[in-house]
Image 1 (cartoon, one colour):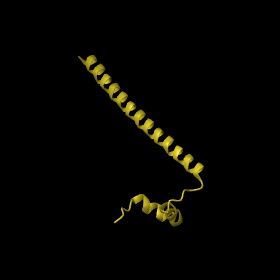
Image 2: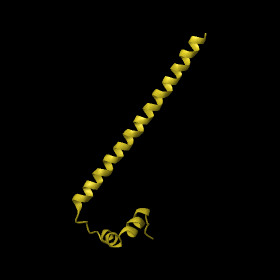
Image 3: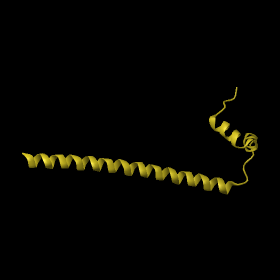
Length: 78
């Protein structure tokens, strides 16, 4: 029995004709658009990773600042 993937179901629901062509081994005629879309998704993925890294660094710096503030206030009290 063939395996039915979730992406196959999504492709079928989006465009049954394109799904059928793909199953027949026919390539799409708009390869340049597909390549541009692939590059767009790759660029977006890099931006998401960079954003997550920036957020993590920001939280670490905030934690360091809070620790330093507590240490400073504790030293002033003693």
